[in-house]
Length: 180
Image (cartoon, rainbow, N blue to C red; front, side, top):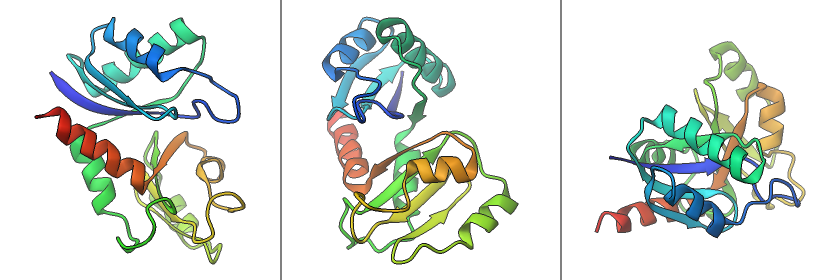
């Protein structure tokens, strides 16, 4: 059995792709998944799966399409991937966790495009693109920020979903608690 963290892209945002997490939890638990947990209403899930990460991704997306009629990009991550993403952040760990974001990309970025994007500046906001993760810091908050998941999706032409550091840490805490 594999344990995965699943981040759903653009769920319950601005009245679009509305999915009640309690209902989704039931749908997943009635499929082949066990120990299903959700965290807040923005598409954060932990579950055990008998399937590989790729097969879990397809199955969760299929279940959401069938039960809720939404095409939702699904990101399936292992605990190690989540820990590595958090550890690899180029930003100081004492920055507010609600102002530092980790965005996961559906596909790796080509090196030439990554270098081109990393050369851009949007101060006071800062960012850094790795192969398949974008990190950004919004010192004045997200409300009027230039940088966002949508910004990077358009620049990179890749589907993405992101979470602030507080949420990533909470998912890791929930993973640790689920092992006890």
